[in-house]
Length: 383
Ligand SMILES: *Cc1c(COP(=O)(O)O)cnc(C)c1O
Image 1: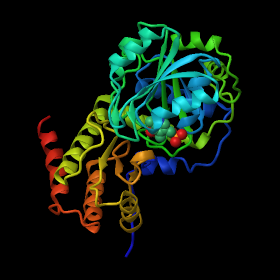
Image 2: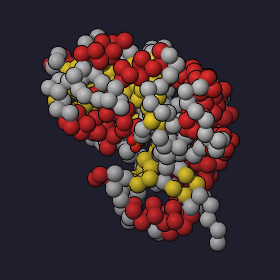
Image 3: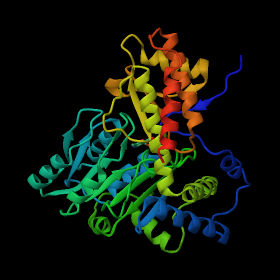
Image 4: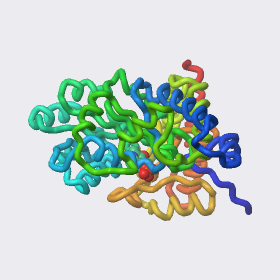
C-alpha cells in the first residue's frame, strides 16, 4: 500500500505548492535593489496582517527567538513582569524571564481555560511595578483562546506594556493589534503564515520603545535597535533567510488577497465544523474557549494517546500532535490553520475515525465525517 502524507499538526503547517516552487529559485544577494523591493513589499503586507502601523521586524529564528527578544529588548534584570501559566507556551515566558533574572508574578490558570481579564487587572492594581504583561493569543498546547481585546483595554490604563504571543493565532484568530492596544505582537512562519519554520516577526509600539530605551539586558543578534535602524533604510541588520523571504511574499500576498475578514471567517468555520465532528464522535474538547487555529480533544480513556498519534501518522499518513506535559498521552491536537480547506480537515476527521476504530472506541462509523460536512454546509448556507 502507498501512504500519502497529510500534515495537520498545529505547526508546522502546509505550504502552498506554488510558494514551495518559488522558494527553489536560485539564490540572489540581499544587499541589492532586488532584495529591497521584495522586503518593502513584505513589510507592507505585514502591516496589513498585524493590523498595525507600528514597525514589524523580521527575524531569522523560530518563534521562541522573538519570545526571548520580547524579554531582553524591554527589561532589565530585577524588573517584574506578569505572566500567565495556561499551557506549555504561555509558561515559556516565565522560563525565559528567569534565565535573565527578571522577576515573575504568575497567574495560574487550569490548562484549557483562558485567563480572566479581571484577575490580570487585579494583579496590575496590586503590583504597580509590573513592567509588562505576557500572554498568548492561541495557546497551542490546549487550543484555548485569550481575550486580548479585554486585556488590551486593561493594560493600556497602566504603565505596563502588553506582549502577545500570536505565533499560532495570527491569521487564524482575529487580532486587531492597534485597535486593541497591543504593544508587542509575536509571530512565527510555520503556523498560520503557512511557510516552513525559520522566520519570526515582532511588532513594537511607541510605548514599548520607551521601555526598550531603558532596557539593560544584553543582546547582539536580537538587539531590537539594530533592527529598527536597518528597517528605516528598508534593510535588515544581518543576512536574511532570503529564500524564506521570497516565500513570505507569496504567502502574505495570498492572505491579503483573501482579505483578513475572510481568512478569519474560513478558520472559524473550519474550527466550528471540527468541534461538531468531535462531538459526534464522543470526544470532548480540552478548551471551552477555543481558538480557531487548533482544536485539542480528550481521547477516550481506553485509547493511549501516544499509540493513537503514532498509528495515525505511520499507517494512515496523517500527522496530528499529541499532548504536552501532563496532557501527554491523553489528548491530541489537530491544526486547521493556514493553507487549509474543508477537504484537508475532512481527511483529518476520517483519520480520527480510523484511529479510534483501530483502538476499539465505540462510535457510529462515519458520524464525524457526516457531522463535519453538515456543519460546514450549514455555515455556508447561513451566510
Ligand atoms: C509554536 C509556538 C511557539 C514556539 O515556536 P517555535 O517556532 O517552536 O520556537 C510559541 N508559542 C506558540 C503559541 C506556538 O504555537
